[in-house]
Length: 254
Image (cartoon, rainbow, N blue to C red; front, side):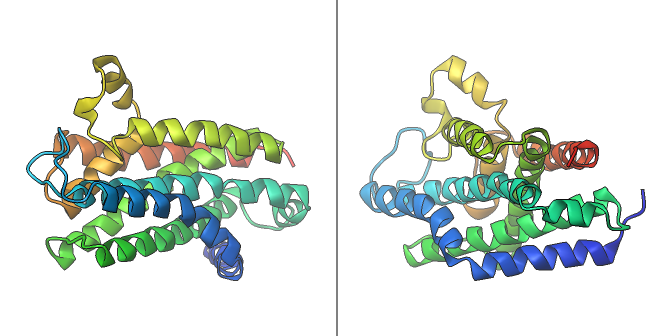
């Protein structure tokens, strides 16, 4: 299937313009992670958290988890734009254009990745103001790569559901049912070692677990699961979901 770079760029640019013009969307997606970051970060600051490890500063443990929470919520919900475009006819207009559907899917994925990364970076900058520190600038660039992989993986997942589901309200409900369990099972807010054994095994099936652990490795310097496993799973997950998302989008009906 031919890849049209111009179509990818135009769809990416459209997503960026929609994002920058919608301040309510930015505030709405950031408000919950900010609440968790501020209240939990200050509330447990300086406290000893069993299982956190060698640091007694909870903010160091919390920030990678909150960034992961931001990425999953903004990335999966980006699939909602597909349903809106189908509802108002824009999707039909671009589908009849002489452009492959795979190019359309890639353009949406890149647009969603960019907007998700912008919001994750905003959370990161706020965390720096709260006392969060990183080992080096190189760690920040590695963290950006991990963030991009996390975002791409869950955008692909959102695209799969958006291609299958036809109802906007149903999509929103199902996504909320998916997002919160994935966040809590990922160890974003507390160590996985504090979970009961059976829940710990379930958390190993959560792709966000490995993304959050990878972020902790590059931003804080330590993690609880093997580093090679975290990076491998974080890299493999977007490959699978983006491929499936593009496949289901190409096969979806208008």
